[in-house]
Length: 490
Ligand SMILES: Cc1cc2nc3c(=O)[nH]c(=O)nc-3n(C[C@H](O)[C@H](O)[C@H](O)COP(=O)(O)OP(=O)(O)OC[C@H]3O[C@@H](n4cnc5c(N)ncnc54)[C@H](O)[C@@H]3O)c2cc1C
Image (tube, rainbow, N blue to C red; front, side, top):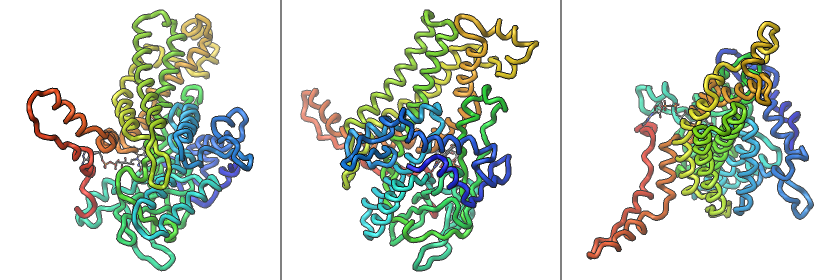
């Protein structure tokens, strides 16, 4: 595994990055809008050589006596999926669920591209190229992120339907193709090294839907990130926002050359490439939900509410939501599916049910965390306030007591505030509502992966003492899911 220092150095690669509200960022490793996240990603790499994390992040010793990062292991068994899931969850918990894309996520993208290329009956070089790319990721630790490739609002408004696309191929040679366009928002392009652009661009290769991989520092690439989440200058006031604002951004391509080895014929089925990504998303959501529950428990103690029945009732409501998703993930990893080439995929029938459950619960969970501490959530002071001689004694009187100093109780309250009431939380909510297709996407995956349509429908007919027609409702699951929008040109 590369070190954090090596990753940091790799980002000084001439990339052209803008952050809204900040202008051009010459060096993402030092700029105030980006450097905290670079340090988080550097820590992600370094954690792999921290003895405290060895048993969570590394495999048992292989035949050669080496332990390798689970982050870059293609799962072949249920046990592999369980171990990778645990690595995702425990590391995502550290950021309260805010770091949603890591190099491990990038490896799952590469594995999805490989599987989609293998599934598509195109020329063998596509699968071979995808395999070579996945192997390179595992060897180097290179950080890949994902952009679906759909047209953005202005592109969808163009008069000519042919122009309602994100990217067009402007030329090609025997070495590769040149593309031009502007891709919609995706997560962490300023911190990643490569972006996979999905088949929603409408591009084709050899008559098949095409995806391609573009280096962030390739000539002609511009990254335009959203504004950083609003946060206080004092990191004690914004403990999460000041560390875990994983910027999302658009990628603009001005005549960018993509070699053919990085263009893949892929299967357009909605399950194909993101199959492992949805699992990663749900693991991340559960990490956030567990962080919420942890905060609720800590606040129940800090607010002196352990014996308060209604507070305990709220905590039990949170436990029920967390435990529901834990159970769905346990089922998905213990009862997996397998790709034709033998990779293990957490079962989407269980996974999608867990995702829908958490989608429904997340507003409730945030509200409960705002209810438990009451007004203290909003009025808790920062470190600077507590240091002011005119205020220190009064604030100690107001916020101290019951085994907590004012500083301790306020720190916990600020953490909870940043978790469920800040701009960072708003971003995280928008991410969940869009990044994996939102509720419509999760409902579609459940619909397609549920297996008991006919057996249940015909099963109930046996309770009726009449000859009944045989029912065939399996088409509910197999019918193509309606596209969210009319496809390009339609
Ligand atoms: C924080 C964040 C991070 C993201 N990260 C990634 C990422 O890493 N990779 C990635 O590929 N994508 C990512 N996305 C998703 C992507 O950026 C877009 O948000 C998504 O594709 C939706 O497109 P749009 O935002 O342009 O909305 P539009 O397509 O312009 O839609 C605007 C609104 O109209 C609704 N709408 C539009 N058409 C219909 C319709 N026919 N029926 C019902 N409702 C409709 C949409 O649901 C939405 O609410 C991310 C999004 C966010 C917010």
